[in-house]
Image 1 (cartoon, rainbow, N blue to C red):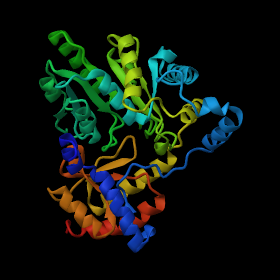
Image 2: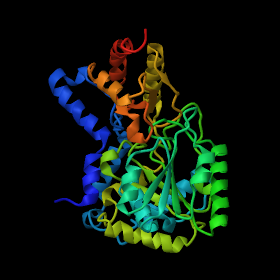
Image 3: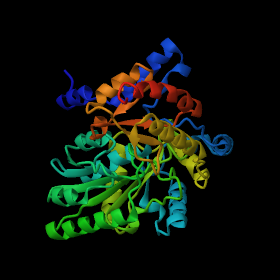
Image 4: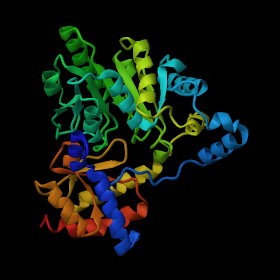
Length: 396
């Protein structure tokens, strides 16, 4: 009865969400304090107090008809877009204007808008494994074809030799996510330079335009002084997708933006397409109250000390238990090598101890599991004895 395309999507529905729902079920049985749910990247840190104050001010000061109405442009309020552009220019030395910004329903909404604007049926989109599994669904939404670059198990930087081989005349876009979900790896400036040099070469070879789409919900969540390159400075055909879900702990408010620079090919036409795509995909415009909110809080600094404390405790604790993992440079995920080839079996074993983790096959990287450490510090501390018990099943 349902659409054929949806049958496959239902069959392969998100393992992350399934594990999260399992966590809720176990919490009802054993008590939430006895369930160690590392499944969902849902910030445990409350939004800054300034966010709550800004909402109150907006409700008191703004014309409610305007505040709760449609925006004049599907791309969002002009003043909000100008504020976002000015902030980016100050931080990264760019030269955007408000017209280069499209306010979106989170990063997910933004990715769907730009893919809708770019893809013809059969166009290819390249993603580097491990990657956020919804990229496949988003590409499929517009009859595109997702092409995977296999994971580099040494350091999870992109495999550039394989990347160069897999770009074809059908390649329309390349998605990068740095800091990365699920590994926490940050792609270095050197990696970005080499990656974009390959894209430039292939554009010349094929006489086509290949767009670099940078998915950046974790940009502010970096540790130990690591810097995240701003990709429009390296490659003209770059589109940035950003979300305030993590930086301001607002995942449920669904607010973000796209950056489409003037340097991008046919940028005016692409901006017009993104404006229309925002409407015809059913978003109409990004939430109006949240647009005004982020404009008020655009300079709010992210306090990453909470996540950093969790990162250190979980990383060191798991290493002491005998598990192998690389130390994340950003985001709030730990990617751990499964002690058995079938990581789904390992996830099942962990569940016996009320530990909920996500199989790496959900990110096109079997043999690993992802732990989201955006949980309470107490959850991490209390989980470590259970991880120790779990490790005894695999390590002598």
